[in-house]
Length: 248
Image (cartoon, rainbow, N blue to C red):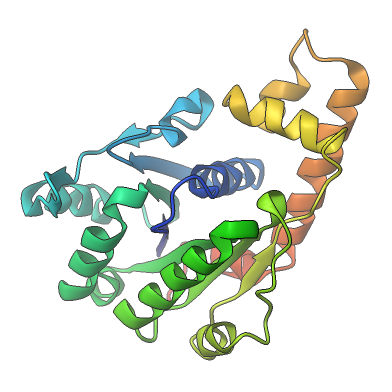
């Protein structure tokens, strides 16, 4: 059973590519067979992480999904080995047409019938983006009833009110969806180092081995990486990885 992770959120600039890159790096560090795809037609941020080898895929024709292009992507997915883990990053502009197209064609059920499993991921961001990102989550839950959504809470942009007590969080939990809350770091030290790495599109491993980075910055990046990896180790996200290659 291949595990296919699709990152969807209608609000731009809230960390979709960050989440995609974190999943990709984590899966590599956990010795998983990884395939990455960047389906953002505007900003190929995920593909800019060269070591993750994300393949750029075009899905849109104007404002609608090109069914032929989407079918080509599905062909690539179903041909993957059963022990593969997939990360697909999509753009804000594709959110409505892509989620609607996937829902109309019952992609979750189709992938299940072909021996794979679909997991949706979205981001709740803080500050002014919180309302819009919560609306994005609500849209996903309505488009994909019964499909678990992994909600990544990103505090980088400010305080977040969304918790497991929120009605959408409770609704998602009934489907098996989980919440992953990313750590919050001091912007002057840890946050500065992380932002520098993100702007350079470097993985943690690349940054830690970088000659031009000072030793304490590398130490802080190791701490950030280890904190996030430990967080993922304790979630249901890891359970699906452990089940890769077995019957669902």
